[in-house]
Image (cartoon, rainbow, N blue to C red):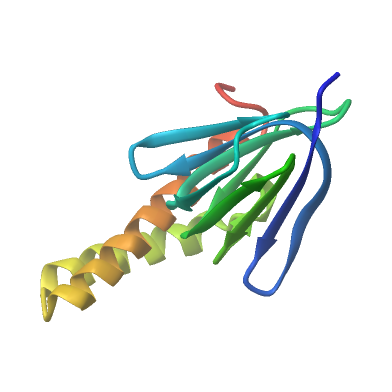
Length: 139
């Protein structure tokens, strides 16, 4: 079985490190998949749902924030602002943060503030979507 070394780090801690069979990361135009032997690359990570399969394990799902992905010689590094497992999401807080981001977008104080609110909204929507994965995708 072909594997690669996967390291996922969020801003303040290691989220996962180990051998993996596949990783699929959210990017601006959809998803970016990585398997063993992937060519070297650097890609921007967007807020969304990431999934990966540790060697011999079940597919794992995480909500991730902005960041970057680096693939180099069968070593994959994912650096993101935040990474959360489905069971770590507090639905009430995520819904409140979603509403706060939507309100901030309506205020339109500056382009920069609008963009920051838009990024926050994308992150909160990904967190809420991840809650559907608590019992496996589609359940």
